[in-house]
Length: 344
Length: 228
Image (tube, rainbow over all chains, first blue to last red; front, side, top):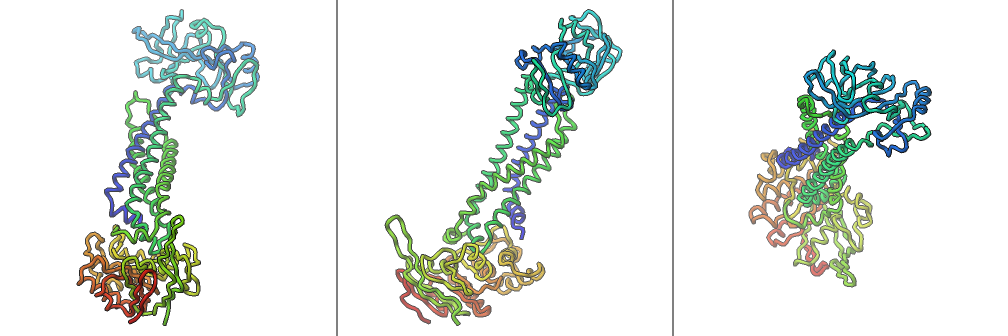
């Protein structure tokens, strides 16, 4: 007999309240997770879209790519050894359009590579978000550190760095603007293990992202909120089922007295937990995916089905643990005690 | 025919160095198709004896042979199986499951006792027993909407639906008025005879003793009188 379902049907209000709380907490978790992902992409899509590999910066850079200078001889040797490797530099700056309106960008320059847009001197490729700001292919842009002009030759999709649109420029232009003769980083894709290169320190893509101070701080805060919400939902399950179990101690005793197995009582509680969680998650997934579609364009929000499923599985696990912990008292229930008490 | 015997059953509670013997070596044989009523003052040990006989708590000594095995030496799981399939219980309060309908209360017991019946057969059996206890017209009602007497009738139905060999009734009329108490006792007597069940009843109510086949009087943990 499906006692779990019969109890849910009879005590609808009680279970709707628990379901609503789980729905709200899971929806909030999905939304925060979507924002964390969105902000992460907005902060570092340039790096996140690269294939797995390793970044190298020099040992004296104190893990800060801005301070890194790659020895040109080392750079030449590495690029010769690895056909798909690239040397690159990133600097925050701005460009002025024909109306002298400033647009903040992250200037990126690299050696010839399929991972980065390749442009000729005097040309620029911008992130598509700037197209929405009124910049078109063929427009001429200027920068007060650069003696020449940049002609817009195209747009790249979803290329952001430090919440700014990326602007790909040629190495010669970059070196003139920032008065440098060296590149900041080397990127070698496809390496499972980092290579030992004299004077250089290696970072996996993930490690490199964490050297970006703003990225690290932002993600840590958001992840803390997500984990906090997951922990809260686990505690909610534990507390709610504990309260329900306390109310049902007498009932459990009687059921045990007439021969119901303790295992059956646990199964009943788990079935209720899974049912409530599943309904709450289906609703919150539908709503968060809907929000994903209608989120304002300026809002960095990205919630993939993969992340949603991972979080859903986590909710089931945490709900299971919470309900089980609260249900441990069922094992201790003595039938005799329940019989000697009054009505259930 | 004696179907259930209690042999030299003792129960001692120990608290530190102080120990109290509440059952002092009880010998009792119960007859099939008969109601044996245990009577005595509060603290005489009658409810203790019933709960030990029903496998709801352990004896400190003695033997309770059932189906060729001594229940006092059984594991919790072995005793649970016996409670589920061979014993029926009627408590002072009806102790019905609040979220199950009258019909489901009895269906649950068929599930618990692992009776080999199809769903249709189970439903037919439940209806038969509900008619027997006069509750078939309330089969879809929940316990909250039943009167005390009706609840106890359902509890009786639940206690016998799986055709137990033993029926343990602990003060089944304590929460009922005299008219309903008589109804319930009439029903218990009827089913004991009809289904040839061995019934052990604990009661305070002297009026209910007229329904018993045998009356066993207990005092201070001992049987002091046994007779018809």
